Amino acid sequence: MVSIKDVANKAGVAISTVSKVLNDYPNVSEATKEKVMKAVEELNFVPNSVAAALSSKKVGRIALLVNLNVSAQAIDEIDMRYISGALQKAMDYRFDVITLFFFMFRDKTVDELIRYLQSQSISGIIIYGLSKEDLVIHELIDSKMFKCVAIDAPLMNDTTSCVSIDHIRAQYDVAYKTIKENTGNKVLYIAGKRNGYVTDDRIAAMKMLAEKENLVLDVKYGEFSEKEARELTFKYGKKANIIVCASDLMAIGSMKALQEMDIFRPVCGFDGTTLMGYVGQQMNTVRQDFEALSAKAVEELNNLFNGQKGRLVEMPYSLVQINYTDIIV
Image (tube, rainbow, N blue to C red; front, side, top):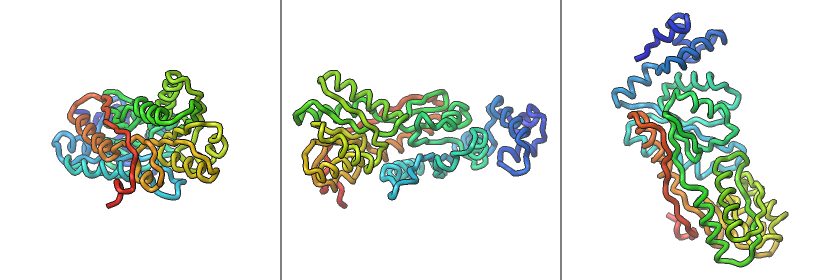
C-alpha cells in the first residue's frame, strides 16, 4: 500500500508538507501543492483515514454533491427526495454522509477540489445534476481519486458508475401516449437545460417520435423553469396542437399560460412530482422514484468500494396521471 512517506519521497518534500497540502493548510506555495498532488495522482495515494475505513468495512464518509438551483424561490422537491433516499440507505452501510453543492466549487480547480474532499476524509461521491459544462467535476471523475456514482450522467470508468432511468424510452413513451390520446400533429416540445445529458436524450426521443409519427416538432429550451415554460407557451402555444414538457414544473407553467389565454391544448410532463396533484387538470407524466434512484446510487457506491468496476445501472419508471388523493397524507 502506498504511504504518505512514498508521496513525500516522490514529491521531494517532507511528510509534514504532504499532510499540510492534503488538509488544505494555508501558507503552502502553489508550486509545492502541484508537486504533492502530482505525486498523489501518480501513486494513486489514498489518505489513511479513507483507506482504513474501506479496508476495515467500518464507517466510511461519502459526499452528496448536488447541483442546487440557488436562484429558485423554493428548494427543489427532487433534490430533497434524492437526499432523503441517500441518507436512509447510507444508514444500512453505516456511512457518514455530508451534503455539498456545486456552487461551493464554482471557482475551484480540480486539484483544489480534490484537496478539499481529502481533507474531509471523503471516500466516495454521488453526483446529482451534472451537465457537460461542469468541467471540474468531469476532471474529478477522470482523476479516479474517488469512487463516484453519477445520477443521470452516462459517465463510467473503473471507479465511476451511472444510475439512471432510460430517458430516451421514457420521453418517447409519455409523448407517444399523449399524442395518441389527442388529435393534431404539431407538437411544441419544451426541453430542459442546454448541455444537459437528459436534455439531449429526451430531444433525441422526440425527434425519433416525430419521424415515426410524421409530427411537426418545434423544440424550445425552458431551462426547467416554470416561468420560462409559461412565456414560451404564450409565444408558441397557439400554433401547436400538443405541448410536451421535459419536467412537471414546466408543464404546470405551460398549463397556466393556456388557461390565461383561454385555449385548450393537451400538456404532458416528466418526473412525477407531488406538484402535479395540485394542478386540477390531469396530465400524463413519467414517474421516477427519486428516493429509490438515490438509494441505488449508495448501494452502487458500496459495490465500488468492494472492488466492482463502474457500470450503468438502469432503474424503472412508470407513466401516470397524478391525482390529489395520491399525494395527500
